[in-house]
Amino acid sequence: MSIETTRQIQATTPHVLTAPQVLTDRRALLRGAGTIGLSAATIAVLGGCESMAASNSATAADVDILNVALGLEHEAINAYQLGAESGLLEKPVLQVAVLFQSHHKAHRDALVGTIQKLGGKPVAEKSMNDYAMALNAGSLKNQGDVLHLAARLEKGAANAYLGVIPSFGDNGLKQVSARLAADETMHWTALASALGENLPSKALTFGA
Image 1 (cartoon, rainbow, N blue to C red):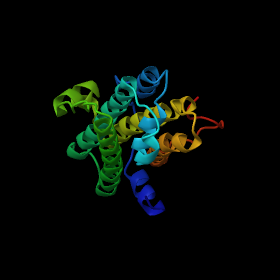
Image 2 (image 1 turned 45 degrees about the horizontal axis):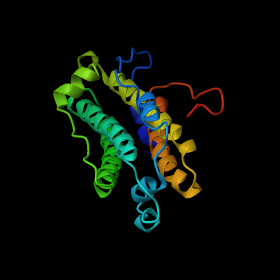
Image 3 (image 1 turned 135 degrees about the horizontal axis):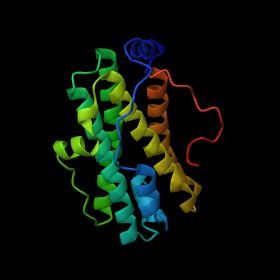
C-alpha cells in the first residue's frame, strides 16, 4: 500500500472508535493446538519442499494444527468480505481490504494443499452468517469499526504464527511460519496507521 493510499484511508477514518468483540482468540487456538509443534515434514510441504518432506514423518497432530490455522484463515477471508459488502468502506480502503483478503486466500490455498498432501481433510469453511454472528458484524457502524475488527484479527494471526516457530528444529522450516507472520504484521501495521493509532512503544511486541 502506498503512502498516499494510507493518507486517503486516514482522511476517511474516525480515530476514536469502539472495536467489536471478536470471539476467536487466534493466538490461543493455534498455540494450544501446536503445543507439540508441527513436524518437519508438514512445514516442508507447506513451504513447497516435498523432497525435504520425503525424509521426515508427518503426524495426525500436524493435520489438526494446520486445520486450526486454516479455520482462522477462513475467518479472516470472510471478515474482509463482510467489510467489503458492508457499504461502509471508501474506495481506497476497499481496495486495500481486497488486497489483504487476497493474501489470506493464498495462505488458505497453501494450507489446503498441505493438508491434502499429508492425507488429511481440510476443515470446511462456515457460512457467511456464521462468521457474521461470531464477529458481531451487526455492531459495525462505520469504516473505523471495520478496520478495528480487521486489525484485531491480523494481530492475533501474527502472534499465532510466531507462537509456533520455537517448535521447529530446522531454521529453514521456521522461515515458512515467519513469512506467514510477516504478512499478518504488515496488514496490522497498515491498519493501525490508517486508524491513527500509535505504534507499540516497546520492542518485541509481537509473539510475546
